[in-house]
Image (cartoon, rainbow over all chains, first blue to last red; front, side):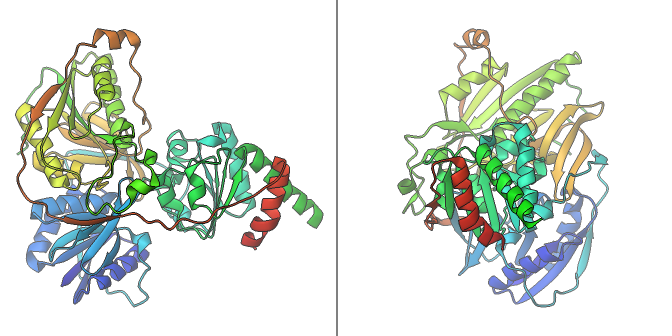
Length: 286
Length: 274
């Protein structure tokens, strides 16, 4: 099986994870094609089709994400090849991906020739030395759309994905104003603040701090979750954490199914009490 | 080359939004997820909801309509859904929100993990019923959560596509959008016709119709169209598996919130923070 890994510039960690996925497919030959240019998938399609005609790889792997998923699906459609997105496991001719809003994993039989986008966080990066790109695919100019500006971001998204300690706010924190206190708690534990989808959508926390399958999947050493119900689409984004604690005033909340430690309490009052303890601890050390 | 609208001057803006009515899977009992094989779980007792991205697509369609109408442009809105998801409650709200047409497509086939067929059925209808200036979708919906349908649809209709959108508003060329990319958020302008696919949008919740509008449209009947689809699946589903490994949650006890915080801090937090 000849496999091509499609990489975005500057993301060697993702390439290393895709390499691991390619190895799991028992690929005889693994080649790297590097994209260079725009973030619009259509701008690469002609060049990719040309390159495909020359090389005829059996499998093309893309990093799951905005560009990777768009490219996999559009190229697959033009080549008439099957496509699987957001693959999180590969073994024995099967690939698994989250389905039913992350309540189930769907396993598909892998055909001989296919395209797939790979959830890079699900595959440990290979430790072997990565090959140099065998070709570089440049984006073409698009005349139907114009880039007006790149918005400044409040944080680097990879900062959340790589964080070792995270405090997560759910709707149960009550108001946007309370988010600052949870931010202070995150700082106190040496971590960063994230939020569930409703909280991020309403911008109680920056929208690029959304945790869950529609945002970033995290796996910190410590994850403290305040006021989240524990919907599965969120749970799938934190379940790889080493230590998970949940605080919710409803003892039947699904949140407690995937936590190591639970506290049935008003999450705002509990966070205030925790901050006071940190303060006392600091005063006693001073 | 485009089938929809190139070089055609429309008397009004025609917008079609595709949406999916799904089941609230968070309401399903844990045991109903087990031993499914490739079958769908029993969802007979859970409520039906709009997929979250499709809800954003519907609301942003209304928002675009509002802005174009404020500029004096006429806008015709069609809302299109594909069975098996159907909810009278949801579908009947749409005319009250001034969608001009609501169309329900149905196909006898189990389309759960067939995004290419779903897109082809939607495209069949859109080709017959078009041209449209804008086709709008949500980013993805359960059960497959593939995210493939908007792209397959764009390919089938040969439309340019902007995906993972946060917002869209009219501009002189067509629309200006905020798009979430791998590297951050960008603002783009694009000309019509176009397919827009909404992700984690700023306007995520569908507005609620007034009682007056609900009363005025209560006799509206959505159009039902039956389509057929015969081709085979390109990716064969083998199994649906539920990960049953749950953590054993230990609850912190105490009379007051301060006691619980102290117990949590001393017993767990100090240790994990090192």
